[in-house]
Length: 239
Image (cartoon, helix red, strand yellow):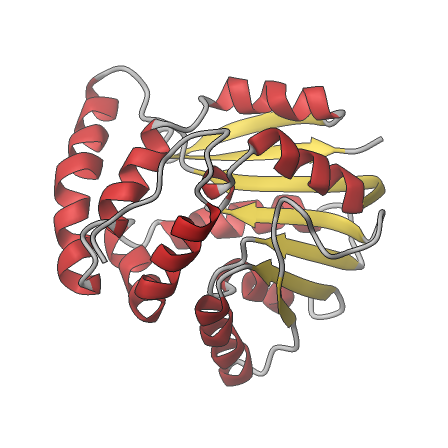
Protein backbone atom coordinates (compact mmCIF):
# COMPACT_ATOMS: atom_id res chain seq x y z
CA UNK A 1 0.00 0.00 0.00
CA UNK A 2 1.48 3.34 -1.04
CA UNK A 3 -1.61 5.55 -0.73
CA UNK A 4 -1.81 7.61 2.42
CA UNK A 5 -4.71 9.28 4.22
CA UNK A 6 -5.34 13.02 4.14
CA UNK A 7 -3.99 14.95 7.13
CA UNK A 8 -5.38 17.62 9.45
CA UNK A 9 -8.77 18.36 10.96
CA UNK A 10 -12.21 17.91 9.31
CA UNK A 11 -10.96 15.24 6.91
CA UNK A 12 -12.75 12.09 5.77
CA UNK A 13 -9.82 9.82 6.55
CA UNK A 14 -11.18 7.13 8.87
CA UNK A 15 -11.09 4.17 6.49
CA UNK A 16 -7.72 5.18 5.02
CA UNK A 17 -6.17 5.52 8.49
CA UNK A 18 -7.67 2.17 9.50
CA UNK A 19 -6.19 0.40 6.46
CA UNK A 20 -2.80 2.08 6.88
CA UNK A 21 -2.38 1.06 10.52
CA UNK A 22 -3.60 -2.46 9.78
CA UNK A 23 -0.81 -2.80 7.21
CA UNK A 24 1.98 -1.68 9.58
CA UNK A 25 0.66 -3.32 12.77
CA UNK A 26 3.27 -6.15 12.92
CA UNK A 27 6.21 -3.70 12.89
CA UNK A 28 4.55 -0.78 14.67
CA UNK A 29 6.19 -1.18 18.11
CA UNK A 30 9.68 -1.72 16.68
CA UNK A 31 9.30 1.35 14.49
CA UNK A 32 8.21 3.50 17.43
CA UNK A 33 11.36 2.55 19.33
CA UNK A 34 13.66 3.10 16.34
CA UNK A 35 12.10 6.32 15.08
CA UNK A 36 11.89 8.01 18.50
CA UNK A 37 15.34 6.69 19.53
CA UNK A 38 13.60 5.11 22.52
CA UNK A 39 12.58 8.46 23.98
CA UNK A 40 8.86 7.64 23.59
CA UNK A 41 9.03 5.45 26.71
CA UNK A 42 9.90 8.46 28.85
CA UNK A 43 7.07 10.46 27.30
CA UNK A 44 4.59 7.71 28.14
CA UNK A 45 5.85 7.57 31.73
CA UNK A 46 5.29 11.31 32.12
CA UNK A 47 1.80 11.07 30.63
CA UNK A 48 0.95 8.08 32.84
CA UNK A 49 1.83 10.09 35.95
CA UNK A 50 -0.67 12.76 34.91
CA UNK A 51 -3.31 10.15 34.08
CA UNK A 52 -3.02 8.43 37.46
CA UNK A 53 -2.60 11.55 39.60
CA UNK A 54 -6.26 11.73 40.66
CA UNK A 55 -6.42 8.01 41.59
CA UNK A 56 -8.93 6.97 38.92
CA UNK A 57 -10.71 3.63 39.14
CA UNK A 58 -11.71 3.37 35.46
CA UNK A 59 -9.46 4.47 32.58
CA UNK A 60 -10.21 4.49 28.86
CA UNK A 61 -7.24 4.65 26.47
CA UNK A 62 -8.58 5.86 23.11
CA UNK A 63 -6.76 4.98 19.87
CA UNK A 64 -4.85 2.48 21.98
CA UNK A 65 -3.17 0.82 18.98
CA UNK A 66 -1.03 -2.07 20.22
CA UNK A 67 -1.89 -1.04 23.80
CA UNK A 68 1.53 0.31 24.81
CA UNK A 69 0.04 3.10 26.90
CA UNK A 70 -2.83 1.02 28.30
CA UNK A 71 -0.29 -1.55 29.51
CA UNK A 72 1.90 1.21 30.99
CA UNK A 73 -1.11 2.42 32.99
CA UNK A 74 -2.05 -1.07 34.20
CA UNK A 75 1.53 -1.91 35.20
CA UNK A 76 1.72 1.29 37.27
CA UNK A 77 -1.74 0.94 38.81
CA UNK A 78 -2.79 -2.75 38.91
CA UNK A 79 -5.96 -1.92 40.86
CA UNK A 80 -7.33 0.30 38.06
CA UNK A 81 -9.71 -1.10 35.42
CA UNK A 82 -8.07 -0.19 32.09
CA UNK A 83 -9.94 -0.37 28.78
CA UNK A 84 -8.26 0.24 25.44
CA UNK A 85 -10.33 1.20 22.40
CA UNK A 86 -9.22 1.27 18.76
CA UNK A 87 -10.78 0.77 15.34
CA UNK A 88 -7.93 -1.33 13.92
CA UNK A 89 -8.46 -5.03 14.86
CA UNK A 90 -4.94 -5.97 13.74
CA UNK A 91 -3.42 -3.57 16.28
CA UNK A 92 -5.70 -4.78 19.06
CA UNK A 93 -4.72 -8.40 18.37
CA UNK A 94 -1.06 -7.51 18.97
CA UNK A 95 -2.05 -5.62 22.12
CA UNK A 96 -3.82 -8.70 23.47
CA UNK A 97 -0.71 -10.81 22.86
CA UNK A 98 1.41 -8.27 24.73
CA UNK A 99 -1.03 -8.13 27.64
CA UNK A 100 -1.03 -11.93 27.93
CA UNK A 101 2.78 -12.08 27.78
CA UNK A 102 3.03 -9.54 30.61
CA UNK A 103 0.16 -11.11 32.61
CA UNK A 104 -1.67 -7.78 32.68
CA UNK A 105 -5.47 -7.88 32.68
CA UNK A 106 -6.81 -5.12 30.44
CA UNK A 107 -9.85 -4.98 28.15
CA UNK A 108 -9.16 -4.23 24.49
CA UNK A 109 -12.12 -3.68 22.18
CA UNK A 110 -13.02 -2.11 18.87
CA UNK A 111 -14.48 1.37 18.92
CA UNK A 112 -14.65 4.57 16.90
CA UNK A 113 -13.11 7.52 18.75
CA UNK A 114 -15.72 9.86 17.25
CA UNK A 115 -18.62 7.70 18.47
CA UNK A 116 -17.35 5.85 21.53
CA UNK A 117 -19.48 2.81 22.43
CA UNK A 118 -19.80 3.72 26.12
CA UNK A 119 -22.50 5.41 28.23
CA UNK A 120 -22.08 8.96 29.50
CA UNK A 121 -19.73 9.32 32.47
CA UNK A 122 -18.27 5.81 32.17
CA UNK A 123 -14.63 6.65 32.98
CA UNK A 124 -12.63 8.66 35.52
CA UNK A 125 -9.71 9.27 33.16
CA UNK A 126 -9.39 9.19 29.37
CA UNK A 127 -6.01 8.99 27.67
CA UNK A 128 -4.88 9.21 24.06
CA UNK A 129 -1.21 8.69 23.18
CA UNK A 130 -0.12 9.60 19.65
CA UNK A 131 -3.55 8.90 18.17
CA UNK A 132 -5.43 12.16 18.46
CA UNK A 133 -3.95 13.73 15.31
CA UNK A 134 -5.41 10.82 13.29
CA UNK A 135 -8.97 11.78 14.27
CA UNK A 136 -11.12 12.99 11.38
CA UNK A 137 -12.63 15.74 13.59
CA UNK A 138 -10.76 17.01 16.65
CA UNK A 139 -13.72 18.87 18.19
CA UNK A 140 -15.94 15.80 17.85
CA UNK A 141 -13.25 13.65 19.47
CA UNK A 142 -13.01 16.04 22.41
CA UNK A 143 -16.80 16.14 22.71
CA UNK A 144 -16.83 12.34 22.98
CA UNK A 145 -14.08 12.46 25.62
CA UNK A 146 -16.21 14.92 27.60
CA UNK A 147 -19.32 12.77 27.21
CA UNK A 148 -17.87 9.48 28.49
CA UNK A 149 -15.82 11.19 31.23
CA UNK A 150 -17.31 11.36 34.70
CA UNK A 151 -17.56 14.79 36.40
CA UNK A 152 -14.25 15.54 38.12
CA UNK A 153 -12.44 13.36 35.57
CA UNK A 154 -9.32 14.03 33.55
CA UNK A 155 -8.22 13.75 29.92
CA UNK A 156 -4.54 13.32 29.03
CA UNK A 157 -3.42 13.69 25.42
CA UNK A 158 0.18 12.84 24.45
CA UNK A 159 0.96 13.98 20.93
CA UNK A 160 3.55 15.34 18.50
CA UNK A 161 3.04 19.08 17.96
CA UNK A 162 4.40 20.66 14.78
CA UNK A 163 8.14 21.47 15.09
CA UNK A 164 8.71 24.93 16.51
CA UNK A 165 10.66 27.69 14.71
CA UNK A 166 14.41 27.72 15.25
CA UNK A 167 17.39 25.45 14.67
CA UNK A 168 16.13 22.44 16.62
CA UNK A 169 12.74 22.64 14.97
CA UNK A 170 14.42 22.78 11.56
CA UNK A 171 16.58 19.74 12.33
CA UNK A 172 13.54 17.83 13.57
CA UNK A 173 11.56 18.83 10.48
CA UNK A 174 14.31 17.48 8.18
CA UNK A 175 14.45 14.24 10.19
CA UNK A 176 10.69 13.90 10.12
CA UNK A 177 10.22 14.66 6.43
CA UNK A 178 13.25 12.94 4.92
CA UNK A 179 14.92 10.45 7.28
CA UNK A 180 11.91 8.99 9.09
CA UNK A 181 9.94 8.00 5.96
CA UNK A 182 12.95 6.13 4.56
CA UNK A 183 13.66 4.20 7.77
CA UNK A 184 9.97 3.53 8.34
CA UNK A 185 9.44 2.41 4.77
CA UNK A 186 12.42 0.04 4.93
CA UNK A 187 11.33 -1.61 8.18
CA UNK A 188 7.58 -1.72 7.54
CA UNK A 189 7.48 -2.08 3.77
CA UNK A 190 4.97 0.78 3.70
CA UNK A 191 6.58 4.05 2.66
CA UNK A 192 3.19 5.74 2.40
CA UNK A 193 2.45 5.24 6.09
CA UNK A 194 5.70 6.86 7.16
CA UNK A 195 5.15 9.77 4.82
CA UNK A 196 1.67 10.23 6.28
CA UNK A 197 2.94 10.27 9.88
CA UNK A 198 5.24 13.33 9.56
CA UNK A 199 2.68 15.09 7.36
CA UNK A 200 0.03 14.50 10.01
CA UNK A 201 2.30 16.11 12.62
CA UNK A 202 2.98 19.16 10.44
CA UNK A 203 -0.79 19.58 9.92
CA UNK A 204 -1.61 19.21 13.64
CA UNK A 205 -2.58 22.30 15.68
CA UNK A 206 0.20 23.93 17.74
CA UNK A 207 -0.05 23.25 21.50
CA UNK A 208 -1.88 26.45 22.39
CA UNK A 209 -4.44 25.90 19.64
CA UNK A 210 -5.17 22.36 20.90
CA UNK A 211 -5.46 23.78 24.42
CA UNK A 212 -8.01 26.29 23.12
CA UNK A 213 -10.02 23.49 21.51
CA UNK A 214 -10.02 21.66 24.84
CA UNK A 215 -11.12 24.80 26.69
CA UNK A 216 -13.91 25.32 24.16
CA UNK A 217 -15.14 21.81 24.99
CA UNK A 218 -15.25 22.76 28.68
CA UNK A 219 -11.96 21.42 30.04
CA UNK A 220 -9.67 23.32 32.40
CA UNK A 221 -6.53 22.84 30.38
CA UNK A 222 -2.75 23.04 30.76
CA UNK A 223 0.08 21.57 28.72
CA UNK A 224 3.82 21.08 28.77
CA UNK A 225 6.38 20.36 26.10
CA UNK A 226 8.75 17.38 26.29
CA UNK A 227 12.24 16.88 24.80
CA UNK A 228 12.63 20.39 23.34
CA UNK A 229 9.04 20.42 22.09
CA UNK A 230 9.15 17.18 20.10
CA UNK A 231 6.19 15.88 22.13
CA UNK A 232 3.55 17.57 24.30
CA UNK A 233 1.22 16.49 27.11
CA UNK A 234 -2.16 18.22 27.35
CA UNK A 235 -4.17 17.74 30.54
CA UNK A 236 -7.86 18.60 30.61
CA UNK A 237 -9.86 18.43 33.85
CA UNK A 238 -13.65 18.29 33.87
CA UNK A 239 -15.31 20.18 36.69
